[in-house]
Amino acid sequence: MDSLPKREFFFKYVLKALDELGGSGSIGEINSKVAKDLDISKKLLSEQYKNTTQTEFEYQMAWVRTMLKNQGLIENSSRGIWVLKAKSNELDSFKLDEKDEKRIDKEIEAEEIWKSTAMSMVTNHISPNATYSKREGIRAS
Image (cartoon, rainbow, N blue to C red; front, side, top):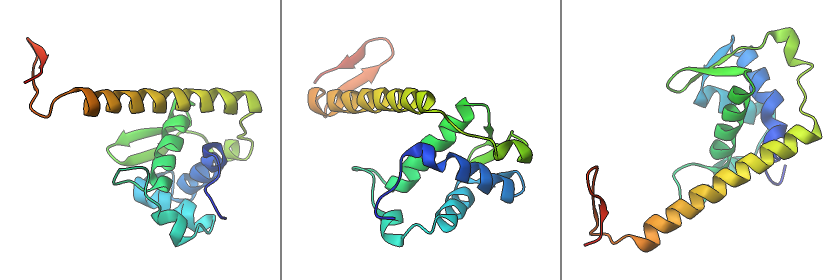
């Protein structure tokens, strides 16, 4: 594997990992299991995502968990712990059709554009000396 596949590729592997972990697991356990099952190289696993503390793999896996949660297949039972809601026998038939994949891709792209625009506004248009209060909002200094 030279690069990480599309997020949707990981759906079955995250569900399988949770199933094999006994129905629940921490983010680290899930990520490790998926990386091991897919034999993802250390090089790919260590690539940073933009200017963040997350790796590209961790970032993509966070989206995968969110997308599976939105589909009602897993839930976040407590901070950092994810629980499988689907039954084992339902996992084999799990498949997204092309329409769902495109819809999900558009949703993610819109979210990423929004985040990028918001960060740009904050970093490029607000003075480092600006202050904020609930009553007055942002005040440039």
